[in-house]
Length: 353
Image (cartoon, rainbow, N blue to C red; front, side):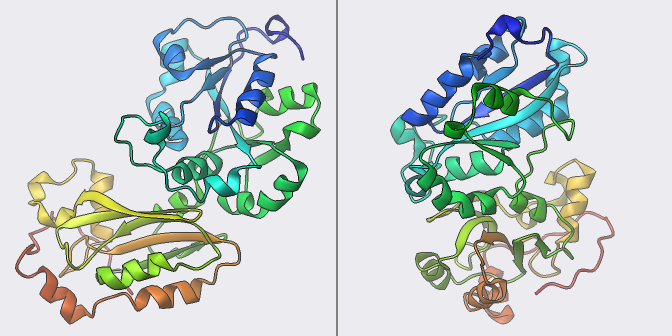
């Protein structure tokens, strides 16, 4: 492979590299490092000097790639720190196909392996692996040809648009061009399909193979727990917010990564705050009101699912069985969390499930 000095000088691209550090992923990164400099994120951020040919930043496992990219692009971090003309390039995730199925079935917290942001980082191995794959513009696959064929359908669900390269079947020149060549789209776009749908207008219920489940009634926690214990086999990814009837003031997040499902506290519903404490950002406030219910406020189910041949109608019907009636829902919130007055914005009328 060409050495650092042979790379174009003052390259405008800053490429990101990620991957759960298995032996094969570490070996793959070593092979890439033979061609050009890939620096750890902490070193890159702390030292603004840019050496000739420096185009790579290695992210630790706890960093959520899509969030980092959004933050850097929103703040113009790269141009501010390194000068005009410097831009984010490719987001490359190395995936070990020999262990991918096991990783997507692992509920072990990443903190147990020393990969967490803190010792209490509760995100699972499955969460991190799925997030890294779905946030990539380019996937470098390490592992056997047989395992690549086995996990390819899952990779297509998690990230239908990423370009893929099998490291073991590529030459040094092909690998170098794949991870450092210019982006056809001009910049890194790493919005996972589930996030794109969650951010969409309420009238949008499907994007590609991704579909949404929305409802302004709470789940019975026992029935929803039973659904999580026996989810559809075809389900690969799920994200969103959950309203449970026994906790009317508490919002919950939901995450499915492979075989691992998590429901976790996600703060309080905005309906429990006075209008003066609402977000100051007008776009955020309008988004809240677009989803506002006259009795329940912002309490709602808003979930997005992806899978291999997943039956959307069947999933929606199963989740409907977990809901309380509207009368029971009203009874669950009367004493603990009355609806407060809302800011004076005109919100569109939206027909909820």
